[in-house]
Image (cartoon, rainbow, N blue to C red):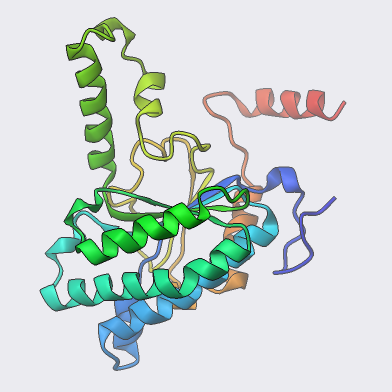
Length: 258
């Protein structure tokens, strides 16, 4: 049975990604191409976020993680950073009620201590409002970096070792993963980056180890539902091996359908 007939998709539900992670790149260039201030592109990008969140929920995707502001983005012009903070604050205030009404659980991952106090409070209020919702989990990565994520996990584990709660022999890949952001969710099945660049830019470095990567030249404000459908269709057509051979995967699929 197909998951949906909308968005030019006709894909079995088991072929859909459980978790999609996206670098939303190209807002500034979108604005510049139209002789608009770069901030106009960021504002237009919020509309795309709304569309992608809605479609993800309709498809039954479990989690969507969006890279909104990296730990490196503080290097941008001070005015642009300030406007981004204002946009984040405004968007949370405007969108969170609708997210809550549709059963979305909102989370924000990253080091939030550098954000203005007003924004920190708005984030906390939004997260608390939606924390018990059972629908799509939307993770906003803000002042986030994959290296930061691994470092904060290492600090947690080191503290347990110092306190005698763990021995060094007990530090495993599984333990590290348990201390990372998003540790209660499946790792992203599909990673999407818009805007033409082909790198992960310190986003979910650990969690993307076995993700399927999809790059498009489409700028984020133009990444509409049909473009999202193209990315999902590409994912559904791939054979995910996780170290096995293609023949082993086919044998497993035959056993599953026997």
